[in-house]
Length: 113
Image (cartoon, rainbow, N blue to C red; front, side, top):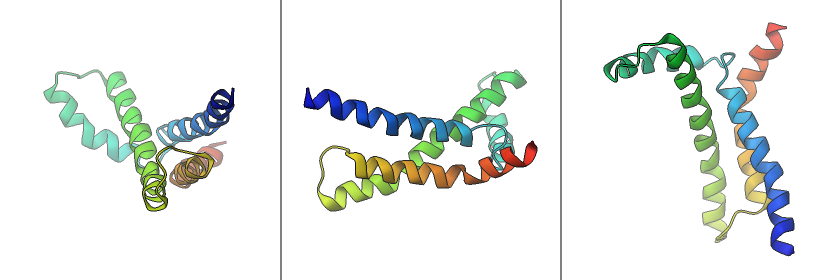
């Protein structure tokens, strides 16, 4: 029963990390235009010329990239403390990193309304 309780507690952190990553991948992110411009020639060589698909893939690139980038401090923390599994502390560090990366997107999102 203890493993299930731990998994349920970690689900909230993982859901928050994924949500903040998605916010950072939205069209409100200041990095979105740059990612779209850089990704467009690569997608054209793969014969993906639909603008809608290009928009979605650049959004996905930003979302996944921000989650990966925010996980680096948590991974360094786990390595320095000798932990073998993620716990609430390392997931909090990961969530805070994702939140910091998503702050500019939140600023533009709230400024749009």
